Amino acid sequence: MPPEIWKASPTTTNGNEQAHRNINRDGISLTLLGGVMRGKDYDERVNRSIETHSMFGIHTRDRASTHVRRTSRAVERLG
Image 1 (spheres, rainbow, N blue to C red):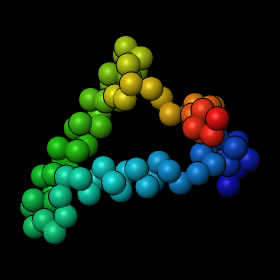
Image 2 (cartoon, rainbow, N blue to C red; image 1 turned 90 degrees about the vertical axis):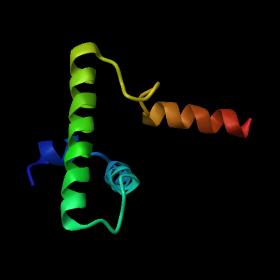
Image 3 (cartoon, one colour; image 1 turned 120 degrees about the horizontal axis):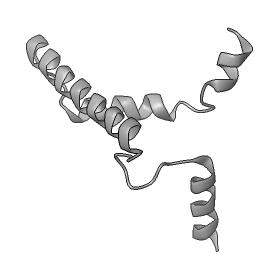
C-alpha cells in the first residue's frame, strides 16, 4: 500500500462499525428481494446526505465527530 493512502486512512474502524449499525437498522433476516430494496433505499439516503454536505456544508448530524471533539467531551465528563 502506498504511504499516502496508508496515512490518509482512518486510525480506527469506527466508520466500518457505524456502517454495519446503519445497515442493520433497516432490517435483518430479510428475503433477498427485501434486502436488495432496503439496500437501495439506504444507498439513496446516504447519497442524499453526501450531496447535501458537499453542496451546502451541512452535516446530517449536528456536529462532526472529531478526535478533538471527543477528547474535549471526555475531559468535561472527568472534571
